[in-house]
Image (cartoon, rainbow over all chains, first blue to last red; front, side, top):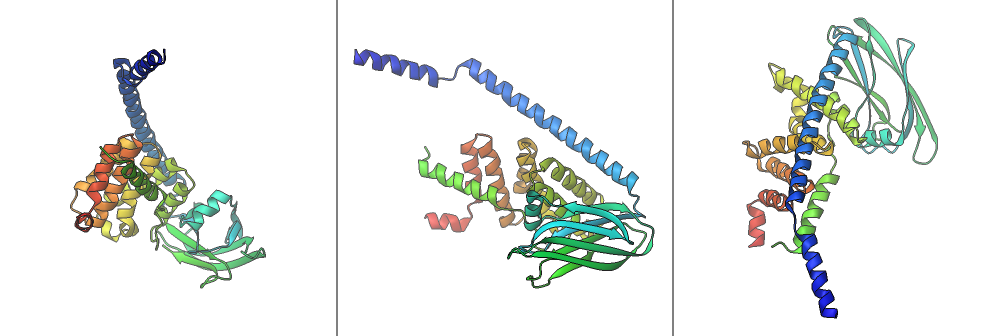
Length: 175
Length: 147
């Protein structure tokens, strides 16, 4: 009886293990579908990139384009809560960070916090930062920086560091 | 026939590559940094869109060596493949990485490309091909150690 059972079970296992032509056909269909999905993704990606470039070109012409980027200093432990930017005394943007965004900044990512238009000439940017230090204390800092907008697009990089960093405070970089 | 420890070591190697961040130690191109920022948040579509546009713009320049992206160009090429892979575009990612493997580039760059190709093959449920790609990475020093 036990021997009979073993034979039946072995036969069933063999049947399960064997790939039938129907299985192979289904697998080939899935592969084909996957390739089609990837082609669609490629098309969508290129359309989105073109639209994005067109939008930027129309909204921010190169002679007035100003973009402000924010990054954290390497190894920075400051828990950044919010950044506020004012250009020529007018509020440009106020951004509150989520945990994911803060993590991306800590890993070396750079956030484009503001894109806008300014006339060529001398301007002033004010950067206000609020957050918490590693010891739990509140951290607030505000800095003013003058900058000059030329005929080409202006990219401003703001690097933030807490008071314990080798170069503490808010630093402005020009690109 | 591969032994279980070989599959395990291959899986660990691939996991190590997957976990390695694409941090730019000294970032010189802000838009590349922006693409990384989006990728680190898992927004691979946006990251790809940004990096594709940056690379296309870089390639159209008369003197690309003067562009700020030139400093990160290899990392950017790899990152595109990496983001495509994470956005489940294995075909495009595989093609890009194979091009690097066949190009006349330094051995460390080829090693990195081979690792990434192995990852694609592994995710595509092709462990034999993944192992082959990893073996390709082995330099002469690796072979000497085996001997």
